[in-house]
Image (cartoon, rainbow, N blue to C red; front, top):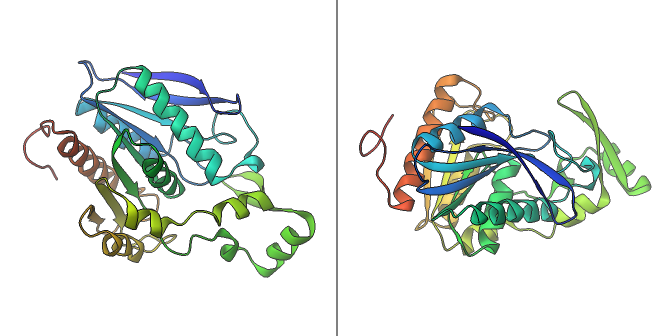
Length: 262
């Protein structure tokens, strides 16, 4: 069953989410964050949460502030703000009595899930889909002209998904304070890294870097032919089953349909 819910972040802004509730008491809960300028309705997140629900998990996908149906201004976005919003989602799930909690995220959401998992000790597993661990300084991805505009005005505009958006100097300064490679090396809970080998935005080499950074706790799942959004239905089905099966193993509950599914 899917339920549309709302909850507040630390700034009093209302965030919108979709809660997937299994028919039986949940075996655990997984909270999922979306990619940069996206929303909770991206295909791969919907499919993952649906599969998790079928496996017995409560699953929450939500819009970060300034995105989707959540309140807030996009230009106020920072990585730290989104981490605190994922923490608010964890608090909500804890109030519902989830016996086990995992985090997941796609692209930028993968970064937020990792950073949150390192801060919140009640998180027992994290799954990163199409995420980056190196070159995490967003300023590097601006053109010289954009960098000059940011320096002169304190903000830079861009177009994404039919929206005219802007980021401020604060976004870049905040991102520079986070080191995803260090977060991966120092992680003390299991992490599943899922990546398409034809990702045109973040190369699959990033997945292998994560494995090298923490070989004991990182497990890889490479999707043959998968692009960044894992847009093909077969790829979404494969990813969702892989993620759900992995979370079942981490939570110590039976994998639906047997040991593993393809």
